[in-house]
Length: 316
Image 1 (spheres, rainbow, N blue to C red):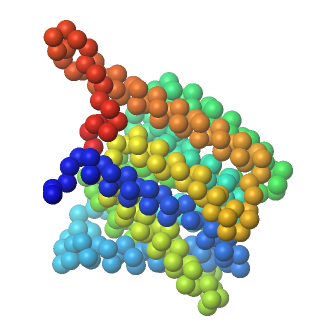
Image 2: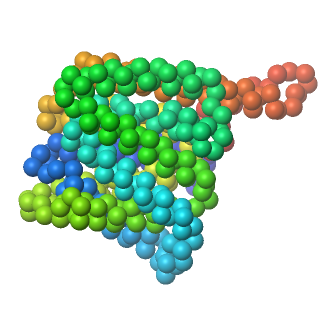
Image 3: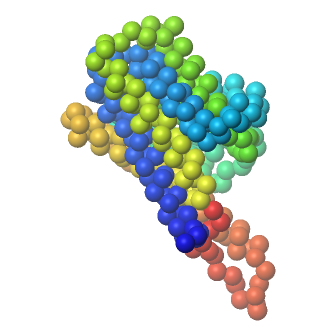
């Protein structure tokens, strides 16, 4: 039986959920490696990611792999790889300095930060709801930052905020190069992370007993979710993607609580709730505006107002 829009949509949601599940394991992986610092984790996590994605490219493109890599504009390749390397390094570093709930809550701000940076850098005008959501989210971050000052982990909060900005810049670059497969750039970014962690942070030397877990983190938590996310996003509306990925902010601290008993502080939970509420408000408002525009653009049929499409009937 050939695939239908409904089956494509269901498959896409399933792939996105599995990708989000994989990303949400970052906190528990770091907590299970207390003897390693951020440089050591980033070094071998980056290598595992690069090798996994290189194998994936060879499986998909075969003899045309080199030509596929060359099809990526060199400036996009270098910039995206740099964003990935520095963002990935800072992300793991933030997890070693702050609680998982804190890092996950700040990461949930990505849709809002992307909208604001998109306005500044490429002229995409966010709606009023996005600006209001941004103000509300800043309040949540302020509560988390205050908690970080009290707990003495403010540096981890700063690293998480910087990571969020870098990730948002990656998304804007993806918009600029919509038709380009950036997987080769991620491979270059993974190799760069390996070199940065190894040469600058002395991350090459790690206890033998931890190597398997670090390599598994690169494969399970980063490389495979990236592959699944790209496949799933093809048949799911952007607004739905934002909502599905938001689960990561809930799952990440949940796994660390179940696995190692890490309990988020009250301020971290309050800040997380405020940020997630702000993002949901922005996403829901965006859906309403998009439907209103679509409805206004459709020609009237017999003088009756057109009915907005249901979520499952939106273009994918």
